[in-house]
Structures are given as C-alpha cells and as structure tokens.
Image (cartoon, rainbow, N blue to C red; front, side, top):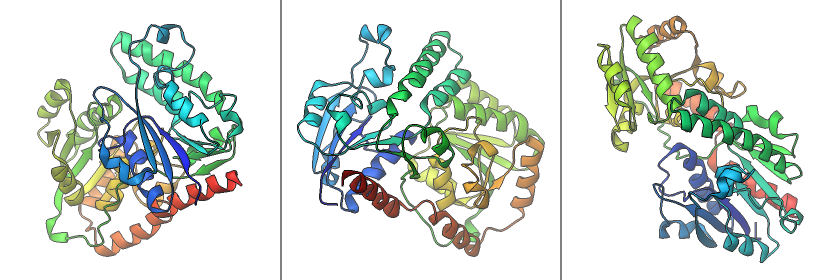
Length: 379
C-alpha cells in the first residue's frame, strides 16, 4: 500500500506492558512490516508509557498529545471521559491537513470521528470491546462507591456515544462474537488481536511442572474475582497444586491464598519467570466471568503453554473450543484437571494445536488484511 494513512492510538504503545496496549503495539509493528506508511498519533499521561523514540522505526510520522485530566467540563459533558480527555486541537489540525484515511484505534480515539470534514474521509474503526458492556462489568466488581458510580456513568455515556460509529467505512472487530453488534453501524470484519508471538514448536516433556497456573493482572477486579473463585471453589477439593501469578494482588487475595495449603501466590513476577510458568506448568487454567473481547493471556498460553483449560466466558463464538478444554462448574473443572494432569502434552499435540491456531491468529496475514481493507475503501 503506497498511500500513507493515519492511526490514532489511545496510549503510547511501548512498552506493551498491559493487555489493552498489546494489540495496539503489535498491530503497528506488523502493519509497518507489511508495507504500511503510518502517520501515528498517540496520547500520553501520568502513570502510563511516556513518548519514546523507539516507535519512530515503525512510523512514517509520529506525534504525541497530552491527555487532559481533571477538567470541570468532564462533569457536564455528554461525552465519555475516555473520549473527551483525548481531544486536542493540534491533532485535529493535523488530521485536517490532508485527505488520507484514518484508523481510529478504539472508541477512546473517536472524538473527531464525525467532524464535518472528517466525515468525508475514509474512516476505519478498531473495535476492541463493546466498551459500555465492559464498563458495566467493571462497575459490577467495583466495591468503592464513587468509583462504581463513575463506571456506571461512563458505561451510559459510552452506550450513547457508540451510535457515532454509524456510517464508518469499515469496522475491525477484535472478537468474532462482537460482529453482530457492530454490523449495525457499518461493514464489520473479524481481525483478531495482534500479540507477541512466542511460538515454541517443541515441548520438553522432562520440564513439566505438575501444577495448575492461573495468571493475569491481579489488580484488575475481573481477574481478582476469578482468582478468588479458584481459591474458594476449585482448589480446596483438588489434590493438585495451584499457582496464581500476576501483577499487584490485593492484601485480601494474598491472605486468602495463604489459607489454602495447595495454593501459592506469586506477586508481580518478572516477565522471564512468568514465561517459565506458562511454558512449564502442566495446565494453564484461565477463567473470566465477563465475556468481552479476547484475553491476550489466552493467546499466549495457547502458543507457549501445554494443556489449556478455560470456561465458556473465555471462548469467542466457538473458536477456542477446538484449541482448549472448556468447563464451567467447579466440579466439572476439577474433573478436567484430574484427567489432564495424568495426560502428557506432546510435541505432536502442540503442532496440531498450532495449525488450528494459525487459521485465525496470524499477525502478518491480519496486518495485510487491514491494509487491503483501507486500500479498498480508499479507491
């Protein structure tokens, strides 16, 4: 694709150190590798990734904008906070300085989606989640009163703002299950998440650790809830060892894990240790109770891990049923764990799963598909 195009990102995507930004970074990297000439715009703010020269190698041009914080207008605006805080006149002026296609990477970046001049442009929207449903789920698990009220308000505003998508040229949905939802706004394509591919062709059967691993960002309420479910409902009736590993667990979660003899909790392990756990634990157990988007930790476990067990909420329109073992009730999960703990995971098993996995999750092919979609809409 010879023509440059704009991408607006909601955060600086380097380093790709949390779930939401992983897709953003590896999408940029693989679009560049596939020949994309990218004019990149991204927002930065305290506590997140700062501007960095390391992204310049992937960009035709790159610009950074400070995200607005603590403005009184947020209380009175109908726009969601995540959108309004990413408005910037310099960004708008740069977008208006040419007539090139624009890829809005997430609902957070869509403040100028329906500007009168931008409406005339090729507009592509990357749908990472049905965001208002995601925020409703966050509100459900939140225990703080003010934070819960904020999340509920943001969910309502996001549900209203989502209607701004009507008429975009194409929508790129991370999750196959979200295609019916977004199709009412425009032509929707399934473009799975981009991720760091660490495919390991051979499994060293001598290094298997007879344990069940649950991993994730434990500061996220959704993951904390899943960890508590394992500690309270699964581990106490299982003969197997369970390891819960992840970033910033709460004091309550640490205390709960200490009360169950076959549960170990690893607080914020280094990346090398986490990779070792994923690769060598005999079973990766991944649970969620909020069916939104695709969990990148699942893709990592499928590429680098051994047996993978999920519950139904982790699935995406049946894609993962042929790649994982699916169970929901505690007794059903324990039954699957008992069976798999006595079942070797061989190189042949890995190669078979890799072949099925690649049918959907191929970074380079999906980058080429995005470039084709942009080019088709631009001609």
